[in-house]
Image (cartoon, rainbow, N blue to C red):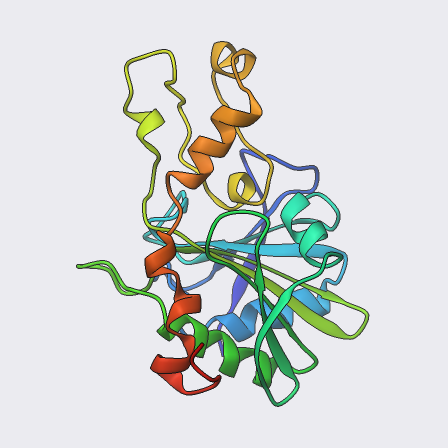
Length: 231
């Protein structure tokens, strides 16, 4: 019974960039709202929907919202749908995979039904650490609907900003990575910083907010929720 307003993003990164804001004023949280995201993705199948956690790039963490952009604009989502993945576990018609080409804790969830997708998604979320004082893990989330299947990409992280944001040296970047950045579209608001970008600098910015390998949820999926053998 939740209602959302579909709005034009006032500060668009993408063409046809939308904000889907809950009508009721409530904090940013994915709890009990992931299925809403799946329903939106199925109804508006030409778009990829994304969610920034309250400390993972959300511009308005005090008001729940999703964002959306036309399919094909997020490099990570497009690659995750077409490259080999490491299968971790399945639950009914939902399947969870590890994506090993980017930061340490990127997962891909594919499912035919929203019910199975939600069950597996929340089990995955339960495997991740929740920072002190927070209500959910730090993560970014993409979801779209393709060929009768939901596809979600979950990126767990450990920090809001990389050390580059606070640096006063030549490696300073005025960046607070959100979904767009973690999905491969890095937003640099200062022209001088754009000019000095390199693959090495962007890689450092992304990996500095990643979950440490020893803390990745992939290490705890089996022991936490019993849905796969411990390896």
